[in-house]
Amino acid sequence: MRYEESEDSVSAFFEDGTVEKGDVLVGADGANSAVRKQRLPQLPFEDIGITTVGSTLPLAAAQTCCPAVVASCANKLLRILGRDGYSLLAFCYVRTEKGSHDEKELLWSVSWPKEKDEESPAVDDLVRNPNGEQLLKLIASKVKQHFDHPELEQLVRNTQPTRVLGPKALFSARPQKAITTYLSSKLSRVVLLGDSAHPMTTHRGLGANTALHDALDLFTALQQPDWRQALERYEESMLKRGNAAVAGSLQSTKMIHASGWAAVFRNQFLWTLGCLFSSVRLVMRIIFFWK
Image (cartoon, rainbow, N blue to C red; front, side, top):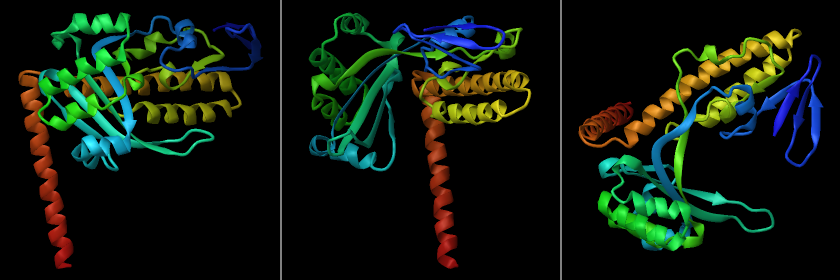
């Protein structure tokens, strides 16, 4: 897809040959945005050195092979920090498809720094020649090596090879100290929104919330009498907000995948924080009891 601007309109050209014309083009086409590549080609978007593999399995099957994992992620997201920068995510959800019954499933994903991957040739081979069965065996061995709970290995081994997604590299925009320098010097009828403007990792849960904030600001801007100036102000605030979210998300990604002394300090901090929260909760219960 590409676009062309004129004084009074903007035209969007799609891959199927169709052309649409309008007053404003909103690029909301995701992290690999074609609109961003044309609107802000200088905005960095790069591999951050983290590999991830994920899959799903029916909740009934998960309860049979790994009941403790299912219990731990009931009504919440479970994040387990392993050795050498390895991390495992798991949560339960309901998959809904039109014309079929809702199915309860468990989603899991394992991620790790490429630089810590002692078996990178095996992973690279699987990227070039995907094979779900071989990949699951490799991930199961990694989970066994880098995590202490035996159910986590069973979670991987009981997954169907056809359900595996990956291995994939994680990408993100690069935080900029002066993001406004990336703004075009002339007013444009083309603006960006959400991941198309500021693609980020998932590790702080900021992507959807930032996109919603963008959408509200854009809605307000399009209602202004001088909407061109309003769009310029929107783009500046949107990029600053997105830049901050990208930086925060990358910080969480680095924390989750820390190793060595950084992981020791992280674990000590999280343990202390957990004790603090437990103490506050205990005090609140005592106060509530005495009242």
